[in-house]
Image 1 (tube, rainbow, N blue to C red):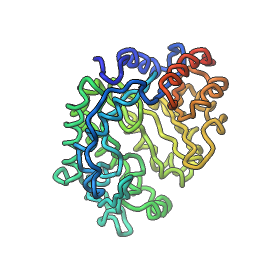
Image 2 (cartoon, rainbow, N blue to C red; image 1 turned 90 degrees about the horizontal axis):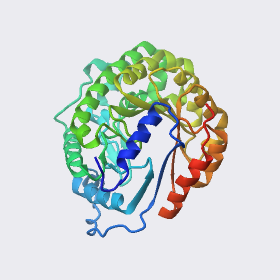
Image 3 (tube, rainbow, N blue to C red; image 1 turned 120 degrees about the horizontal axis):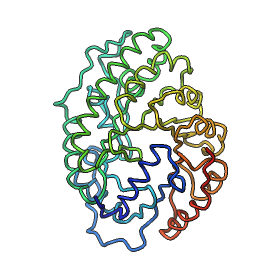
Image 4 (cartoon, rainbow, N blue to C red; image 1 turned 135 degrees about the horizontal axis):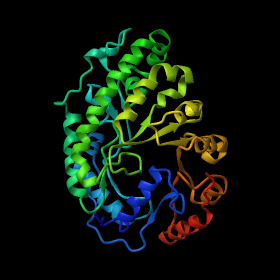
Length: 363
């Protein structure tokens, strides 16, 4: 299939397959975007929503913005246009279970579930309400995006959470921290219950989008011919590796067995403590190393990056365009994926050519 806004989509898919397989295809994986040199003319955007609710539940608004953004962007290398409606949290697993969301125009905050306000974690009553507004909106959004994206871009399955983060949203982070110490068995059972639900959610969303996507993508800019999602547990920033292994690892293993491809989103320097354990997981193809907002970038943690590569895991990084040469001077291009952007399309094309010269297979 060819895409209007990604002319070399067929070649890109082949490079992505090689990257998943940890094969050398001549350079690192490099997704570089820039303003398109000669974008087509598009109709004016609709008026801005007057309330957050008007924004997050307005499919026409996001359709117009996606079309304009995709048409105006050069998607170089492994970059590709993804049809999505923002990630305020209204289409998260926790909201499908009955949590309320407080949103502004840029993001949202999930309110804890009233049924979990007590001392115990009565997870057995946590069932997805398929009649709720947020769940029904997600289904309609995915149907609309799959139709609108055909031959133009790739629809994502969304960003609906997973790992300990859903339980932290239901329970509150502070209360869940106490639970990890006071009732670890209950937390483990609740996490496994939620992961079983998560897999069913994914299957539902994947069935809607898989044809138009020729597989899948999510909030994370990678594509798979099968089921792909970025695994994560941002809550793990606050717990020890032993607690993670004892309590949350069984749920993660269930997710990885379910998915065809996954990259684990290691978010924040304190979460780097779990990298050794993550590198042991045979079903996990790669790790993204993200130091966190306000922290020095990934290249300041070269020991962690090289640890991931030594374990023969793929490595995903967000870097500035001026950091790509340094990264390729220190790291093997095999299994490395860099996301970046340039000020012009010419700069982006030039960076792709230079990356071929800088790339070295050190494995």
